[in-house]
Length: 302
Image 1 (cartoon, rainbow, N blue to C red):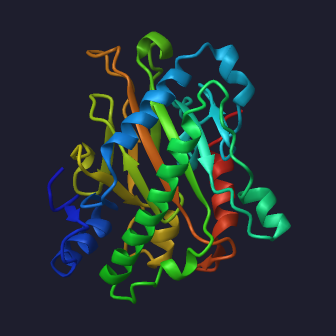
Image 2: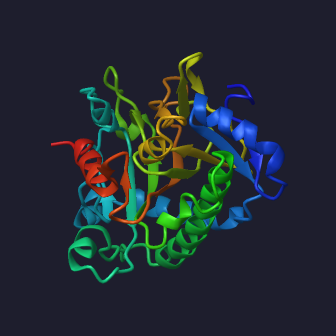
C-alpha cells in the first residue's frame, strides 16, 4: 500500500506537520505505522519465545487454560471466527491465542465481575507474567500517547479521548499462526483471522512479516498487503473510535491470510493490544461496553 494510505508517524518528532497525514490515513484506511515509540524490541522477542514454548505444548497441557473469546487464558483452534462480526459465515480462524485483559478493580462489583477479572498465567510458562505485565504497562502508556495525538489531529483538545481512559478496559492477545502441518489445508474462505474491524478505540500491533500476513482493505484498492517496518508498530482504529468521530475516521478493515501453499511451514506470531475506554462511556448514543460485549460474543464459535 502507498505511504499516503498508511503513513509512518514518528512519535518523537514535532506532530504539527504529521497531522494532515494522520487525518487522511484514518479517513481512507484506518491504519498508521508509528515509530519513535521507545518500546525496546527485546521485550517483544522474549514474549514470543516464551509464548511459542507454550503453544508447542501438547493440547492436553493447554486445555486446562481454555476459555471463550473475551476470557483470560488459552483460545484453542476453532475458538474464534472474526468474520462472524461482519455477518459472514466463515470457517473458524486458523490460530491459537493467549489472552489477557485489564484486571485492576474499579470498586464497582458488577463492572469488575465482567471486565476486571484476574488474569490466568500458565504454570508451564512462569516467565510470561512479568514480561506481559511490563508490556501491558508500556502499551497503555503508548495508547494514551497515540490518543492524545489523534485528539489533536481531529482538531480537538489533546485529552478529547484520554479524559475517558482513566480506568479503561483493554485486551491483549498473543496470536500464534502455525503452519499447515498443524492446521491442515485451509477450507474455502478460511483465514488465520477472517475479515473484520476491531471493536475498540486503537489497536497496537507488533507483527511479523510473512506471506500469510496482514492485509488491509480500502475502497480504492481493495485488499492489499499491509506495509511492514520491523521498527514500527502497526496502529489501527476500531469501531468505538469511528463512532467517536461520527464516521469521519473509518474502523480499519483487515484480515490475516491463511498459511500459504508455497510456504506451508510458515509460523508467525503477533502481539495485539486492544485499547478501549472507561466502562459507561457513551458514544453516538451507544454504551461502549454493551457494544464490546456483543461483538466479542459474535465472534465466538459454537
